[in-house]
Length: 84
Length: 424
Image 1 (tube, rainbow over the protein chains, first blue to last red):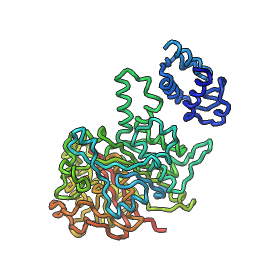
Image 2: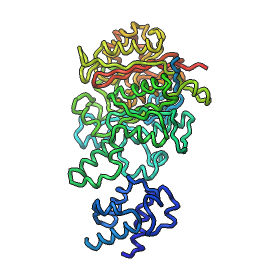
Image 3: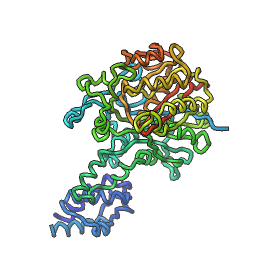
Image 4: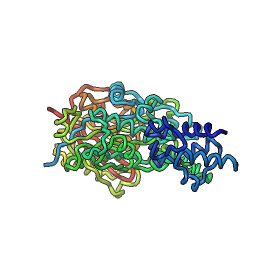
């Protein structure tokens, strides 16, 4: 799966949780879930569950804590996909 | 000087109608909301009928954002939010998108138990060792105060926001708690009400107690028979009702429509002493509750035009009537009109008090007394106490000045409130 495909999938997953829609227009690796998209921090666990379902992987608590930006999420997904 | 309290908005999700004007029409037409549920049959329930509000997908989308709807599996929250938001809009109040909440408005919204279907989901996941899969809303959908928390966030209320719980008196108690808060000047507006989840996990315990009718599975609309000789138990229901209580000065200032005035009321308990028990009322406490409600409202028993009883369609209906005759010292032809909504909706449990308060207020505002569905064969023990004319079989047009509403609940708890026509 290419970087672009993964990022597009992440975008689709986070859309329902985004409170600042402008943040979606410029959706890139640097996009920060809490600051740029204003996703409620409690909803991050839901994003993680949706990512797990989409990619058929499991994201442990430590990995989740480091998942602040789209790029972080992409790296974690790639790592998990490789060790699957 | 205690503040005067009026009702300026109402919203309802009842088994026989969703939405205030639909509900008003349903009352006039004596429409039943009791249906057969194949699921209850599959689960070997004795009573396979129940009352459940019908909520379409389109309606849900009007009240909840797509994000709120994700994983939403708490029917009490669905009914409570629909009725609460409706009541707020009906009162002509805006939902402000300001940074500061509305400090003068609060919420007391009760429930018996909340989000059982969500809780069941969680139990299955936890037992499978998948606690991490619960998602973020398991807590707020199942905490008792979830309903006041959802409404508090939607409406932006900054006064007291809480949930009360007192079994089947919950809704009427919530109204009186909100009343007291406004009366004492601590709030200008209180959204009060209650909700009850639906489904087998709510109703199963009652079915196990063998207090639900089991002979009407083929004839659901005939099953709920308050005050009738053939009454054989209450039909379980669900739903929610919400009322906006408001300081009279505030209501007048903003030119709000006033449905009626809340004069006062009383809540008490029989302490499960004498004939009182976990499931039955102590008669002295019921009589005392009615009498103190009148005293607190400065109303003479002879001024009562109509009563909306608790009257669940069990053998205890005649005991309730006996208590009313003793409390008011009125019997036979001298007894006021009395009706029970439960013939149409079944017993909506923790939602019953608020839904029935709304029915009572609609009667006052629209000048009618709704008829008792399935009450034609009045119980002989009741007819020994009061005249048959007091128990209308069909709707009658009538101006009501004072109406008394009672709710009684498991744990031997009672609540009575007194409503009065508001004359400008």
